[in-house]
Length: 155
Image (cartoon, rainbow, N blue to C red; front, side, top):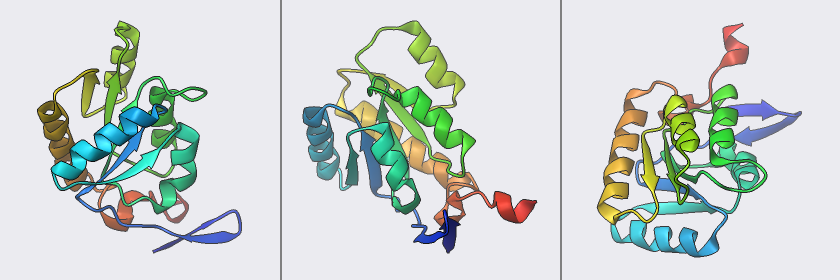
């Protein structure tokens, strides 16, 4: 499937069940999560910011996102809101070192699959990823190239 964007055409990638996008501004955390997920046979795509992921969203193969709440200019929750308001639907797992109840409430209100407080056990993340991928499989907007909402075609 091809999606035209700004007079350019970009290939929309189908999600792969074993690909997880990690969005965290801490390079050590990205690398640690990548190593852990590799041990469980997941492939990863690593992004240092929400902006970096937004630029790559159309070509990502990720079946779900693992997103830090506190990213910098655009928070993880704001990234989730942005994606929900655009043409992309991704199951999201939020993680944070913050104990702010407002962050948890916002993430849950956004419909996250899981909200993990750092540090968290590997098992907790792996179970959340399995749940997210299963949720994506049952969400008509998150499977195959259908992840892209066909808003132009629906009009």
